Image (cartoon, rainbow, N blue to C red):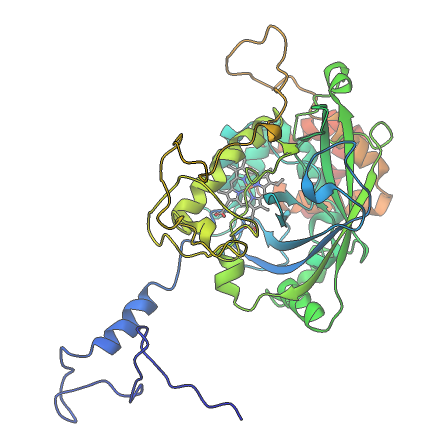
Length: 488
Ligand code: HEM
């Protein structure tokens, strides 16, 4: 029989009584020596860290990525070599706009973030359940998020503001069409696809670069809900679904695929391959199956793991690089900045964020330094007493490895530096193509979902939106107009 552990203070000292504060007499006030009470209350006051500015509500689980196709032809990434290679992962699913206690069933994109603990450092896919995004320029992100979150006066959702943003930003047309379609509310996190969305680069041992996109296709089938079907569902339903399914041994999985574009194809492509509002047509850039992602272990502590996990598009490993996608470029800087604020300077030392391979660098100190212990060397992440400057004359001290250098990134010839207005880009063809492959029932659902919000916007917003729908497809505009009239 195991012995019941003794209740202690945080400094480990046994506690005699945790129910009663020390007071001056039975009916008297508390005394100044209630330091145990103070510890308990002071820690309680500090239990919260800032919630994520977006994607605040989420749920996570551990699992494995198994490589089913050797990718040494495309990349030197260590976890992409050798069929059968297994890599531990942590995945966090989320909604975007709502706070931590908002509903899992909002009409909202879903975050799909995967942390690969590779032998050569951490690689993150920080994607969504949609292959494109609302924006192609990061300077629009705060405006966009403000318009989608709650109204600053009423603190209520504000569909009129959402459409006001979209009326002023035709670049959102493609993603807005996906959001308002029957795919806008996944029935659970297990029943949706994931997409890296951005174009990344792979480079191989010959230094040859290709551009790639990640796709994670659910093996559980895509299942969705209509707005009406979400009424009455518990706000934490998708979280419960994932936790319980893993606890029951029903492990969700996704088939991982990539699209590949050569540098030459990219140079001659009419489509800007680095425009996040566009998909790469599958008939021109077919999907290549590369692996399987399976989730089979729930967290042991939600706060320590799921709340403090820090994903970033800048978590790249040798063989996988960024691309000129302007949105990605901003994201490379933004995420670590957010996490230094949200979690703290040494957030990468927390167990869920710590690499599973040795970390050797010359960064030192800061709040809570020394938390992590390297699983390989047993050293602390503050590098013990080792030399703290580079270069130095010590043979044993860490040195860069030129063999992992990324090939130089090609730039546009005769490029000049300036602010580029992308208003003239084709914002409508792919939205129109998507509309035309929908069944009549799907087109009706799309129009009804849009009409419900658009009817609340100003007339000039409605007019501009109808012009955008018509630019995608006349039938699209007609259906939305009819659906709006039906609501008058
Ligand atoms: C310039 C555009 C963007 C900015 C400035 C931005 C900013 C942020 C920030 C600050 C966070 C919170 C990070 C944290 O506190 O840990 C976040 C979370 C997230 N973002 Fe973005 N984001 C952008 C675009 C995107 C895009 C295009 C996608 C998907 C394709 C995306 C997917 C996610 C996901 C999945 C999370 C949650 C990660 C998690 O589960 O912890 N974001 N974003």
